[in-house]
Length: 310
Length: 179
Image 1 (tube, rainbow over the protein chains, first blue to last red):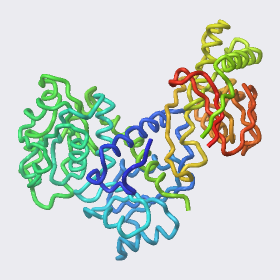
Image 2 (image 1 turned 180 degrees about the vertical axis):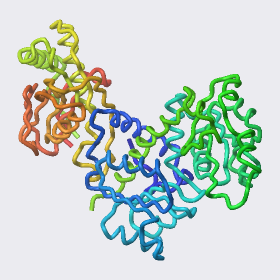
Image 3 (image 1 turned 90 degrees about the vertical axis):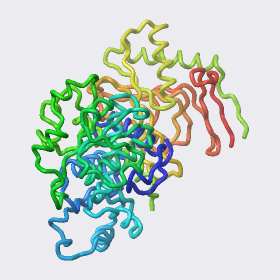
Image 4 (image 1 turned 135 degrees about the vertical axis):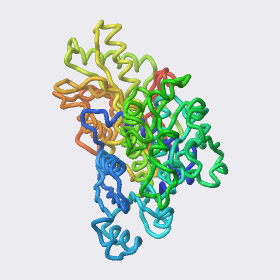
């Protein structure tokens, strides 16, 4: 095992294929550990981590917190809703105040793209980006690729289609970077209004027809329509979206091969996928959640090992 | 750098045989005993001992596992080199079992200290013993001593004891390396 090439995990854009391999190898060890009768290791017992969530989150926050606790780190949690941010405090002030309490690492979710990068340049602590606006969500992309690797043996050479709201999705962007880095072929599929303008410059193809996309792929990652980020109407109605881009069992069974279904959660059951697809044997949605803890343990462990003892 | 042979292949194998016999004296049929090789190098010793017990002494159904202690070590973030993890493979619970840790060289005792914590993730053993091929005297940082020792060696701090095995590309032997 060697070291990560970076001191922060700000996005997949900033890391290498070797970093991804190292994270996956480390996650393998942690996956074994979290299936033991006692699921905890004492590695990070002198490390304090602050989880700063300036935006709502359920599973990512829980997953990070669980990962930190399984590594025996001390954890402090912060939610913007109940904080001085509401009283007008700036991001740097908030974080510096928290850091003066001797925090070694910051896991941050923020509605503004680039918040993690900004922070990493201004404060002394290891930063893990847990989602910054519509920019990146690196640990989600890592756990998605890791789940594909566990299910199909390898990510390289696999065909992956990302379906849905690509425009507002940090999961899509991080996934595109991660999959391309590992040699997968990537297509995006969704309404034209939800496609970013220059998406093809990232080396992905756009497919507007869901059936064609599904027939092409080995893995379909179904994204949620992010109504909370939509300031205007991007499609006529939810009903029409379901007709065009919703995946149901009938469509899945009519394909000429068995594809793997993924979803980063939270699922709008009956919109992007129906319940019987989400709960089918082809779905690895719950594996993604389990792998998420192992991947986050690996990322935190590897970054913490770069923080030298004072 | 100079190296001296401490034990040759014949001596290593005589010692392994003696250690296997000593284990039989205390554990008889191994029904309630499990062997755990400490990763990475204790695994070679453990595999050899298990093979001897099965083939030469006809003891069947010996439970053996590998334990990696990387995430339980007390020197995380203290060294210059990142720690390298290996696979843990323990497919049984150790609750109420007699556990025998097997390692190649006992030096500071810190690895065994970590292993004592790590093994508790798999249950509460009835007792834990330690078997080591080489016991480096006068170098312990912790009050840990082996129950079964192959050979006691006096080595000063600048010296290293290296065990090589046919299985990892060398020959069965133990060297004292002066750096």
